[in-house]
Amino acid sequence: MATVKEILGATGRHIFSIDKDKTVADAVNQLVEHEVGALVVVDGESPVGMFTERDVVKCWTRKGDRHFKDIGISEVMSTNLIIAEADDDLCYVTTIMIKNRIRHLPVLDKNKIVAMLSIRDVVKAQVTDLRAENHYLKDYISDKYPG
Figure: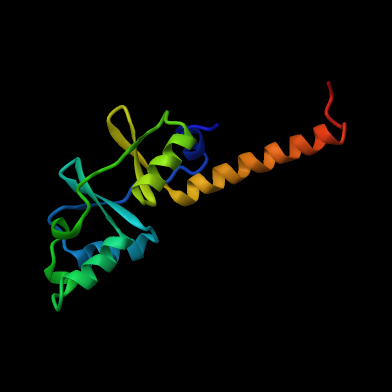
């Protein structure tokens, strides 16, 4: 089974972040501008939380008549930062994402966030592995496999 580092090596994406003192409107603008579903919320250089598309919906339904420009991101962000490490097995990461009902996972390497892993990345890698395995099994069954 592949590791996080192996599947991210092919994608090489930028990590988008936002300062904890910004507003929900600022965060929504970044999500749209960069076409991403999650931002790492930072205090200086340190990650302190996550802001996702799901937080936008929660904010909209729970904050009443307040406008997004009047709501601080620190009021609505997720503060329980769940992370993956670059050497984690893909099966383990999948379990973490499913168990915690999350679609984005910051990836640490040497105590620094180096990537954002999405559920799309995980599924794509697993489908690729399954296709390869299926191909080899078909060859084996049809006696095309040497050995």
